[in-house]
Amino acid sequence: MKLIIRLIVIGALTYFLSPFFTWWTAMVVAFLVCYISPSSGLNAFVAGFLGVGLIWMGHAWNIDVLNESAFSLKVAEIMQVSDPILLVFATGLIGGLAGGFASLSGTSFRSLFIKPKQRSLYS
Image 1 (cartoon, rainbow, N blue to C red):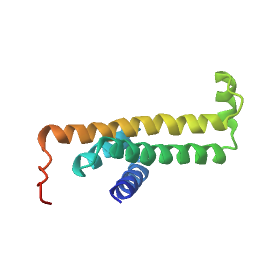
Image 2 (cartoon, rainbow, N blue to C red):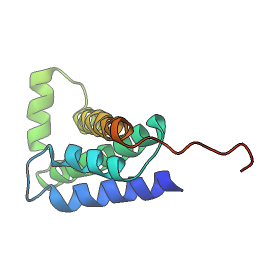
Image 3 (cartoon, one colour):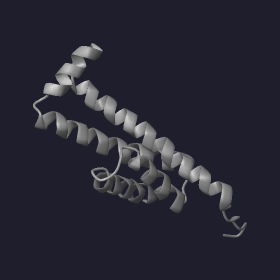
């Protein structure tokens, strides 16, 4: 359940802050969300990967549709890619990896300063 909430928060903040700030704002958002909300490493990585990756892929697809694939066709020709939609998926993958590692860094940074509570033998 925390994964879904973390994913929605990262995605929403990335979506609303990206038009006003630089591209790496998504990484700061993923880092801070996973610093504030304790989680395991894999859980944090997946939340950051999906939260940032899906937003970046959606934004790249939206830009591609709005300019009728003119730009992506030219870039695909330069990069010798057969289908320009692969560029949209590559954008999502790059954003997802950056967001995933940023959220993993946030969780790891939290563990440096805030130690997890010891679980009682009886609880």
